[in-house]
Length: 130
Image (cartoon, rainbow, N blue to C red; front, side, top):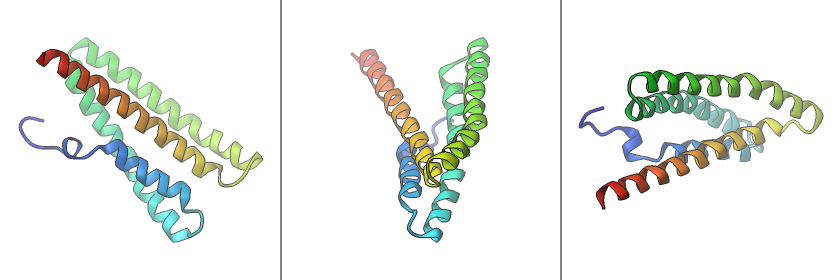
């Protein structure tokens, strides 16, 4: 990435994604708002995927990078593979708004994971600078 400033350096991407997904979960009143925010949230999913790969590239080298990438891809695909059927089942048996709540839950997991990672990284930097 070098000396150039990236979007992830300027904004907390997890927070932006959380806002988009929270908006989707709360926008059941207006169909246009729902589909617009769903479009934004879906587009951010690929951004999260790419940024995560970039972060893995910064943290791991050599064989560690291959292992970390394999684990990330498996977990990511497991989520995309199971998310649809689980959401569909919940929509079928509980309520049609279950899809929205599943999206909000997924975003909450991303936000919490990002916050924990950011805190651990900051702690390591503070220890290294002390």
